[in-house]
Amino acid sequence: MDLIGSPSLKNILEEKMTGRERILAVLNKQVPDRIPVTFFVQEEYLSWFYPERKNISRVSDAVDCARHYGFDIITRDNKYTKPYWLNKSYPNWEVQEETWIENDIYYRKTAIKTPGGTLDQIETAPNDPRILKGVHFHMQDYLLKSVESFEIFKKYFPEIDKRELEERRERARYSKNIIGDLGITCPWGIGGVYNSVSSYRNIQELLMDPYIQPDFYHDLMDFFTKWIVKDYQIMTETEFDALGIQGNIANGALMGDDFFSQYILPYEKRISDTIRSGGKFSIYHNCGYAHNLYKSYRELGIDVWETVAPSPMGDNNLREARNFFGEDLILSGNLDQVNFLKRATPDEIRETVKEIMCQGKKGGAFLFSASDYLEPETPEENIKAAVSAAIEWGGLK
Image 1 (cartoon, helix red, strand yellow):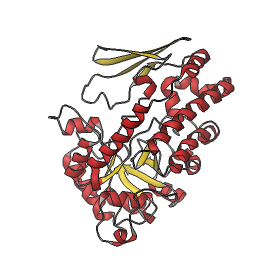
Image 2 (cartoon, one colour):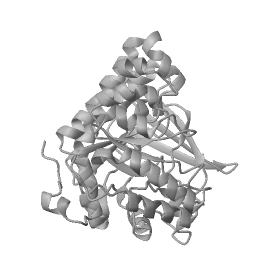
Image 3 (tube, rainbow, N blue to C red):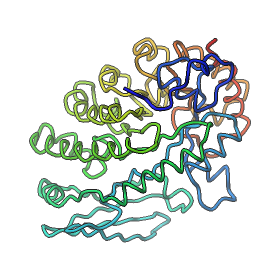
């Protein structure tokens, strides 16, 4: 596989690499000058850190934040997490959207009118305009309520149009230009198959479908897999460096490895295989419980597992995960940004970061990060302490 942007041996042997070279060296299973420091920032933190900015961007504002703190950046653009078929109408597929605010909750009702009937869903989110486009909406009423609704969905499902394809190519060029040598682009794709299906079918029903109506379950998963694979294939034809796969719904607290390997792994793997065959890197996101899924994660064919989350946010131990996966799977994590980074002293943070680095950096298959996105109201001196300690202890020479 011809992976893009692979740093030359000459640059690897130099004392200083750019953030882009450093991250790509790790992704290409080469040895960087030090472990990349790649905090994940999105609207919640950025809107708090830049209160004067009216419109928050996961690309440009995230890059500004990385420059301020001195860390390497993997931008996590979420422009493509909402599928094209919910954004506008197509032949035999009329999309109507209605929004309202009630008790400081933002409601969004979407109806899809087809010749075979109308599909509708209702989503909710906190009413904060500055972060609204970045938060994950909670589904209150699901689109695929029954086998019959899925048959309508499947029959009239539209193909993506050429204009959308060019918009993605342009977004990739725009993002790469803004980031420059500071890091790489890694937008979220539409998501893992199970995450995507659970957005439109109630998770309680979805967990029972393989047992109660297995033919329906496999038809549903196979249909979603086919269009999601096409969507990721389109993304591989752009200048994006890597692609994110959301896999947090199928977590180890919700299911065991037997369920995952039988009912989820075959579908998710088709996404990672598509990304790899397209010459891009995959970053698979589960920021919580995953310990009992390690065996399946090894078989997924992903490049990076994000993130190794320790207790109480997850059930993972970095040293144990490093020993299990060796250098075959790049690990990301594992600094607790909720209970520790916000509350500890800078000295405590430096000591913990040192310990994380010593456990994770063996062989270089590691991206230092928090267990998920940075939280609002995290003291600036704490983040600076984490970054400086990670750089100090991240060397591999």
